Image 1 (tube, rainbow, N blue to C red):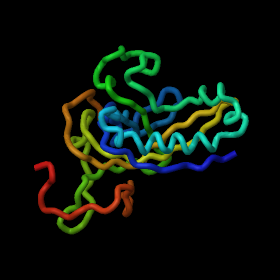
Image 2 (image 1 turned 135 degrees about the vertical axis):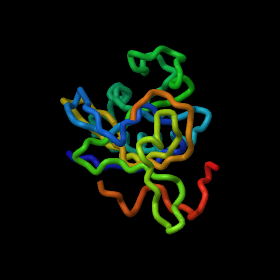
Image 3 (image 1 turned 120 degrees about the horizontal axis):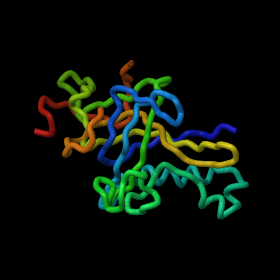
Length: 202
């Protein structure tokens, strides 16, 4: 059974493990993917609200065998995790480690069979065109908004909810974290932008 995807756009989040310009091999799937880790600050609920709303919507679309079984519903796997719960952290991260502490976090990716994600600025050039960022202009530690596509998956009777990476809109520079680092779509996922001769970042 095919499950519909639900698109959303995050609030302003911080990114880590940025690999959006050059794909990396996903050792689990064996596929080349563009990916990054999203960090949602808990002090700003709007950063994660669109994601949690999609999660809740998708849970209502799970099959009755799951919806009618509270234990199965609690066991649903999602990639949206709590950085202050030890069991949800990556094995290499300890409780209260930065940058996970005080954040929700989620890894998102897009395999190379699709168009690569586009990273744009949050303003247009004087001619009204989108400005694409180059690899040296976007790094782990920076802040942005990200468009995602949420979906339900099933494997051998186990259900889960994940999010695919679409596009990225740069917000502002942050302190560097880990190192890492087609066709341009006419319509992006972030609504109208304003035209300016100067960067809003000064």
